[in-house]
Length: 106
Image (cartoon, one colour):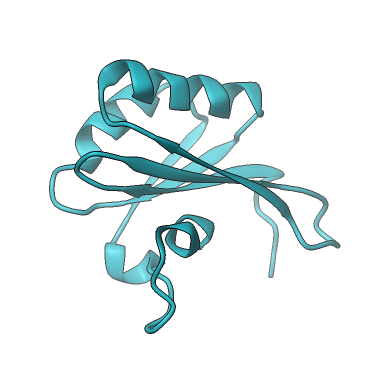
């Protein structure tokens, strides 16, 4: 796999929670990762943004599920250098392997 960012995050957005998988590491090794879960209220989303900034996150991708992604986007916009909104079908875990953790890591 080609590495585009040294530190990046996959975000899985739900109605009442956000699961974020922060990944980092050198291009020639398996990346390290940390998964955290946040609520969807403004203060909790600000905590997510602060965690990503402190980790030096360069890019974050989230899926465009319904309208749940909008508050997350609004808080992260301008805080993360590259914020990507992806089609949910393109970032989902493989069939039969569905978990929020796997969605976040993809």
